[in-house]
Length: 527
Image (cartoon, rainbow, N blue to C red):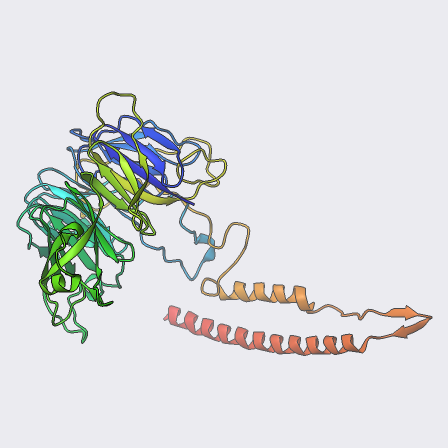
């Protein structure tokens, strides 16, 4: 297993791996905005083109993968940021197993979200290409990032208007003028980046989800999205501020450790690491984002290790924290590996440095593949994802049982909003059906899907082992014309017969119970 890296600059796009040296170049890939590229499963890559109302689609896996553009999707206007909303886990029917299917190897996400320079928010249904909604004033200025959280139930957007807005996905696709469920406007300058913790419960406002924001006002803030206290009583109408971190300069990029141990800050003066479990010199560890009576929205000042003039304990009492510098290069993009040990740092020259967090050493540097003598420009996007590579695969992604024929084109993105209120409307849906539940050859049936068939299968399996309904003949050995019967085998046969009787009785009782419930169910249906 390897981790695939996709990074774009202002004039190039490159696909590579963290632990190998293979690279591929994406042709005609130009994008000037951050968060303007999104990966669709392990197959497609969507890139919003700079100064064009166009999305380039690249095929990254299977025998049909290619470096050139697979498809171009025209848009109503040029967009800056892209994000997808994945489909939720399918719910299988418990009545008919013949129509139960798993997800296919490749499955299109539910929604494609895009934002514009004027603050508009578009929402397309990818399976049909229908434009479900356009929120014209989602932000007063340009949207800087869109992120889908909690399996697509909520969407968070940030903008140059210094606001963080939380939307409910169902409102965006069903209401003509959706309203946000929460707005954060504690920053005074544009929001540059934000991250959301990976831990959450069933509801956004009743779990321990944390939101980390960075702004041009040289602050990084941490919010708790839980609106309910330990006694399940509502404590507020908006996310609570847990801590504020003040820097000498603005943090343009932040990324969160997968285990929420540290925050990594990308600035014009280098890349820095802030430990959320802060170690003091007295062998004590302080959780900087834990809400308590002594720590309610506390403000910390971040200083560099080389500027430290006092002990950590004295600095902590004054509200100062020591941060470590990982790199001195000007950071233009930032990402982290899935295990949190490797940091991917993009610079203004178009290169991506693979940095080991603990040793602070650069393992290797990825350069864009281009023959042009002109500088590629700053790195605008870095996408890191686990990739399972077959021996027969040349490079990126993974694919099994993939047809060698050309893939079907994605549906075109519509320019007019789909009118769901108009009756009798018909539209095509692009959908791939996966294998049947349990596999095409296994014939496995779960008890919830079909109890009768499941019990029949169990009986058939039992018959193969205990030979129900067949005549059992003991083996006889003739030695010197005398028949000797092994007494131990007779005992085993007797014990097996007793087990058969017990199993048969239990099966009949279970069958009777099922028939009784089935008859009651039929009576209820007739009423």
